[in-house]
Image (cartoon, rainbow, N blue to C red):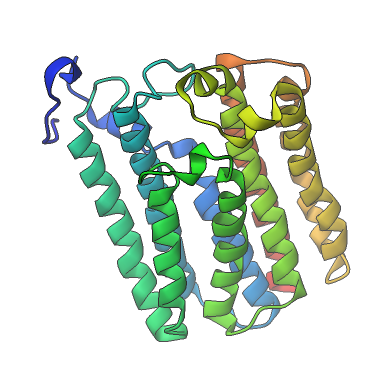
Length: 304
């Protein structure tokens, strides 16, 4: 299957991307960053006795559209800048000359549009002022690596992920269902934001050598290898400390500790000093940690 668009000069396609490669280009390992916050936010709404399954599904569509859109936008922006030409991570469509930049840009716009439409509907039936929040989120998705001064190249990517896929995603989900937020929601949002940021920290830890060479000054490049590894471990441990806080709401939130073995597995290569492709499983395991943790704490909150 071929998508439109064309390279010029030396940027001609080396081969045509298959459907499987387009799916891989969407970075499915990052889907827990979209799904887990909605689960956590719905659990927080259920804690307030206000869970709504159809609003949760709309929020899920918003989050998935956003994460796929930002991934394709990142692929496009990094690809045309040449920062993906040499990398040790998973497939990139533009950097690998598998798809034309315009095709990947169109995919990014379509995914963001799906998320935007779902977001407008959700905000309109809940709190129309949230449309403005959604617009900021879409701008943040594009400006991560797009525009003349992408903030992802300045070391602010992890902060943005914490805000958009932690605070905004969890509290937005809770608010659209319950029309208010509470301490439980805030605790869930901070914990989810930490794990979401940890996924990006692991990704950028792997890419420190190539990012430094291409002028992509991520937080990992600024901190250096050793301190980035410490940051990752702190981010993946903090949610389990916050699990103890959630136990004041209901002791059954201790079920969140079931995700601890996954967190240990995710942190082990980082703690041992592994690098390059050896860090790719860390992204998967961190995402699984986040997903399992969100489900494990949301269920007892919903049943309490």
